[in-house]
Length: 147
Image (cartoon, rainbow, N blue to C red; front, side):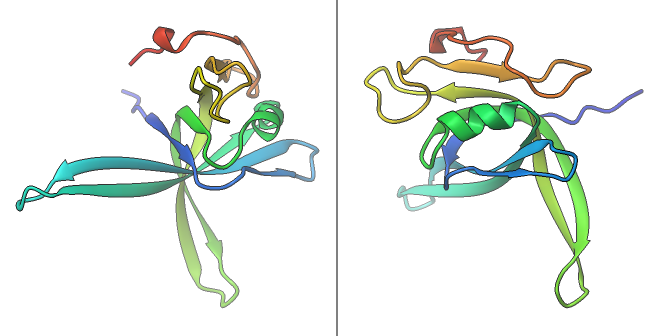
């Protein structure tokens, strides 16, 4: 039986996306996403805990990310976990766990707020099963989200 590797996050970008083009000419967008949850500790005080996630999107969706997302943008992310290794400058092997994005929805306020697209509606972009990331639908209202 095959396993399932799926991550779903909603959070805010901690910095502008980094876009680069690799040797093959394919674009990749690298994002830092913050998710924050709050709870009350034993003393009844509200405590916030923020986790930072590294996310990469490959192919045409990188153009959408470059054009519309910036620091502070709120997005919905679906993807899969990937762990890779590299040797640092001192030849020490390091491991990185990141999310390879497969779907992204821009979330924004109706008041504009600088997030999402210009009219504040959510926009869905997802990766078709056997191709690179590409826009598949645009302009779905936030009420249509599956959560």
